Length: 144
Image 1 (cartoon, one colour):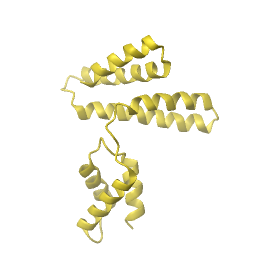
Image 2 (cartoon, rainbow, N blue to C red; image 1 turned 30 degrees about the vertical axis):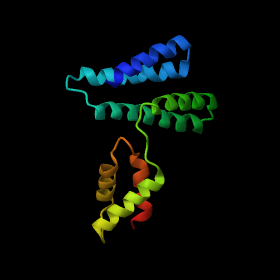
Image 3 (cartoon, one colour; image 1 turned 180 degrees about the horizontal axis):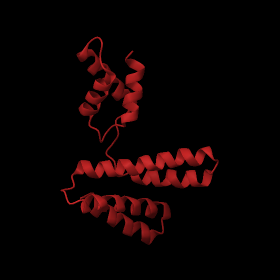
């Protein structure tokens, strides 16, 4: 289970006094414990969704702090996001996503629905390995 690894990493980060890592890992543990308390069996997919959600929160905070000129807070959020990215599987690059989108559009033919293409591309690659926003942006570029 991911939570055990995160707890071990938190212990090591606390000993090393790595504050950005400690903050990020504490928030991640909180999210993972919440999943466990729901009562249902926690899957790897659930764990990855929790990590993705924490990363998304950091991206939103980076954008918000950047707009108001809080560069120190932006750096803190970026540091935490880097820590969280370590728990995600290797992400597929933009070139690979473009290739899969073209493949799916070719299979579907003319008059293809963008939402259907996005769903099939994410399903083909795996939702833990690709950012849905990246897929949507590429589909919007390639499908008219």
